[in-house]
Image (cartoon, rainbow, N blue to C red; front, side, top):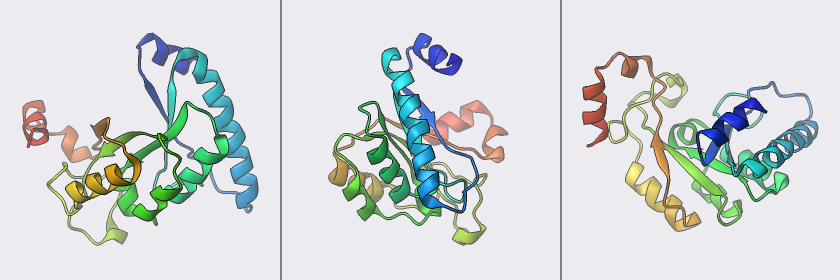
Length: 179
């Protein structure tokens, strides 16, 4: 796959993968299809020394909460296939920190730091993320809980898919990220 070749040429350790497809009437069929699809992707990525990070997207596609993503990671069962945990998607979804108990050791590969504005959860969209520490999520507590439950201590990256952030001067973005 050209995308995997490019990631390998750039010496990227990770490639993030998501499933944006529609749910079928059968969860069993969806999980079998996704398991095979991601297993093949992980096998294609392995000789390129790439780790595949499955990111669940709240309210989008068949894999939209932590427990389903963990189930899929377990079913794919490849050393280079693990989870990316995005705090914003975690907040918007039906996920619970207790779900992390089902994640095999060492399978949390990466995290996205982002925050949520003080808006009722049903009104939040994917375009309303806030800078870490500028919203309502208990980020320090979440990071500590995730570390305690999984042993994961990074890498974390900031992900702000918000139009208003892209309109800020880059100097302002960097200043706010350094807080």
